[in-house]
Amino acid sequence: MRIGITCYPTYGGSGIVATELGMELAARGHEVHFITYANPIRLDPAMENVFYHEVEVSTYPLFQYPPYVLALASRMAEVADWRSLDLLHVHYAIPHSVAAMLARQMTAKQRRLPYVTTLHGTDITIVGADHSYFGITKYSIEESDGVTSISDYLKTETRAVFGVEREIEVIPNFVNCSQYQPAMQPHGGRPRLLHISNFRAVKRVTDCIRILAKVREHVDAELWMAGDGPERSGAESLAHELGIDRHVKFIGKQSGIREILPQTDVLLLPSQLESFGLVALEAMACGVIPVSTNVGGLPEVVTHGKDGFLEAVGDVDAHAARVVEILSSSVVKGRMAAAARRTAETRFCTTRVIPVYEAYYRRILDQG
Ligand code: GMT
Image (cartoon, rainbow, N blue to C red; front, side):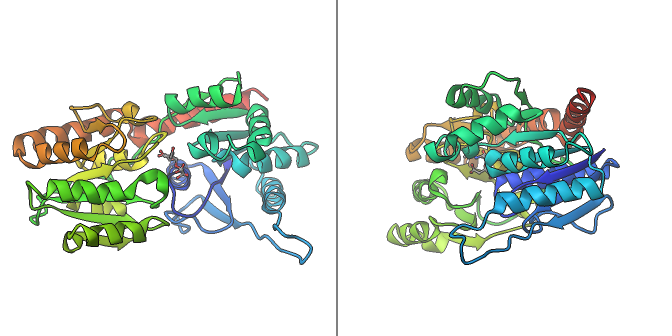
């Protein structure tokens, strides 16, 4: 198949899923065309069967807001025409689904160009639900030739928020279990907690600092904070206030997260909401145990007490107690790390999930 993929190319789970999906499809012999405003961070553009088409958004003094959707739709239609694309697959409904809908209309005389929209989270729960985008988001979802959601939770939420009745296929996020592997040897340093995110309010990054402070009452642990965003300076100040800044390392944005994960023991994910929690899955594949919140799609990924822990949002005492429970017993840690790896392998490996996407594309193409 010849597939056009559009996503947010910067840091963020939806762009990562789209990029990894594209590369996996390319490795299976499909021709994959990324149509984005910048090179997606995890994309290896030198890869066989992968092509990158930049969307240029020119501006003009008259425009208070440069019309990105129009530039994207034009580029999608152009690439579809030049490279005879079979379909477009857009990640994150806003505004990609609308651009794909326009591209489908623009090319309708020459070819059928169906588009699949994958819903990731805040495109439904926050941005799409906002009054200013509600109508167009609902319309572009209903118009899509196929709609997928990364969890059952998000499917249910989409129905509830938008009242859409159309079919929504749940295809979970995935991890490449050969690339994401547990460490061969224990890392040898102090027990190490890790948090990875875009440091937005929804991630509750200061909870990580409070959790570490409580954990340190029992275990000499340290915390690595990977990523960057608006809440970083607040987290740094809190670490200083609590007198634990020596034990917290802000390591910034990281593109090689699969090298970092195996050097850690526990992943902290105290988010207010996660429709899936891709980072929890990537951690589990590396045998790193997630201690996260019991929200959104996380219970579809983590089984409480077996391959991780799920606690209430904001209950830092409970999160800290779980971390101490893991770090205080090599038996508990070993059992849960192995279970986490097994969950990733048996339910979420690329070898299982990518064929589901391929079959879904074929179904959409066969409907034409
Ligand atoms: O909503 C966001 O935080 C952005 C979005 C993204 O594009 O990074 O994240 C969502 O998609 C990820 C990949 O499918 C999921 O793992 C995240 O759980 C989801 N975030 C939320 O639902 C808050």
